[in-house]
Amino acid sequence: MRSVGIVGIGSYVPENIVTNKDFEQFLDTNDEWIVSRTGIRQRHIAPKDMPVSELCYQAGLKALEDAQIAPEEVDLVIVATITPDYAFPATACLVADRLGAKNAAGFDLEAGCSGFIYGVVTGSQFVATGMYKTVLVIGGETLSKVLNWQDRSTCILFGDGAGAAVLQPVKDGFGFLSFELGSDGSGGSLLSQPAGGSKHPASLETVEKNLHTLQMEGKEVYKFAVRIMGDVSVKVLENAGLAKEDVDLLIPHQANIRIVDAAVKRLGISPDKMVINLDKYGNMSAASIPVALDETFKAGRIHEGDIIVMVGFGTGLTWGACVLKWTKVGLKV
Image 1 (cartoon, helix red, strand yellow):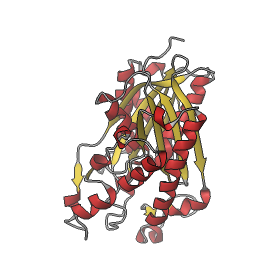
Image 2: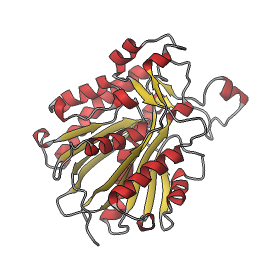
Image 3: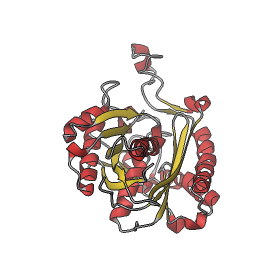
Image 4: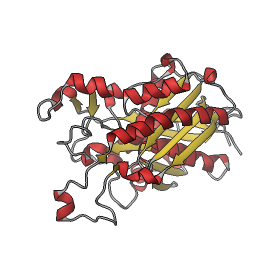
């Protein structure tokens, strides 16, 4: 089994910014209330005519450029999203075609906000076994298109964006050291888009009842998230034979500042090691972790040999975490 790491990263967010002040124009809320309860100050929102494939393409293009890899070298494209362009075909196939990755297989992966973690864990298996050399994993969302903009408990939380990572073999002892994935379908109804699938196909009734928009039981999701974020972070470090003192950076899913603070407290690491950008972007679901990773690297906070923990939770209910010993130097195989 070969060691696998991230040799290129990239991200993209739409230009349009919606601030908390903007919500005051049509909702019974205000900036102070939103910031104090979520930590979010603004979010990026895609135009109505911009599908998630456009965001994924832009992020994927940047990741390939960062890795100095030609699109023809990509063996597999995985897009983690719950807001695909279509029910079918897969968004990954559309993105691969747009990139010019003509030799790549492609599929979508649906794990909600845990999607990027699921994606890199899945992609790394193909590389570790020697089946593929280069896998492009993209987490992208346009959640703004499935929000009920009159529901102040949900529409203030989410934003649009995409982040991408190029996976390749790396030197032994570096790259992904361990991972932990999980799910609990009994909590599936706590965070869902009820209509539009085979159980509740689109109809006049489903549209009138807003069943094509995101529905969330906020208190229950919060309790689940606070528990699982800390627990899975501890477990994934144990799997890697590491202690909390070994962690250089924690990149959590950017959902709510109170959830992140609770996870840091449970893990027992310094807040200085935590990466936070939800104040600028809100919850971008599968895009939040790769966008944060890209920004953190470009800011000079990540160095060769750093131990990075990435952890997320999402609809399903799902959760996932991985430990990465950082290097961007791929092996010639």
